[in-house]
Length: 254
Image 1 (cartoon, helix red, strand yellow):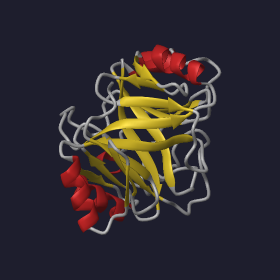
Image 2 (image 1 turned 45 degrees about the horizontal axis):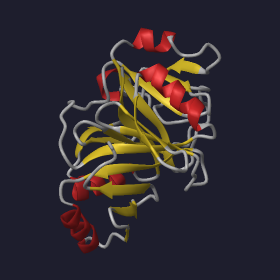
Image 3 (image 1 turned 90 degrees about the vertical axis):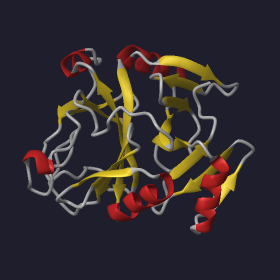
């Protein structure tokens, strides 16, 4: 079974994003890379803020050799699953999908200092970058709130995407909406498949953080000057680099 455990962003200022999620949601900074990239955990889920690079030579379908990415557009770039058996997970991917190993080098530094958690990158049938790792994404598999509990991915064919992610990662259907939106779950984190697009790029549109005190979180954000938008059940915001985040006290499991 695959577990949803990772979202990566191309970032102009990784420290600013890391500080934001530490300050308002209590996430822990778990790694700072030689390139300036940073990672935080909640501590179940990993958010990676990858330093936008000026390096020209790239390796198609994988990370750049210096630990940054082919795609330099600021914002959400890819997401990842922790799997029990990496070889088995790769072997069950459809034969036609693009895939490649991930160089474990950051800004020319290898070994433990430069290594990133991802082991294999593939492109799903809709062109989304997906990382696989059997060793995890530096999290502790410890469930606490606030925590990332939702990832919304735009796909043109909801039924086909649902079947793909069910078969590949054994995700279970948690529910669906009248507009066809489907919620899949690994038991803790929800993958929302939607046709709606709220950012110029396809793929991951936004992610959700579940909290145990929505009113307190709202006040903390407002006191810090963060602009929020409210609905009856949720609070929405954009972080310092424009990534969209939805916050809920009830979550998305049902």
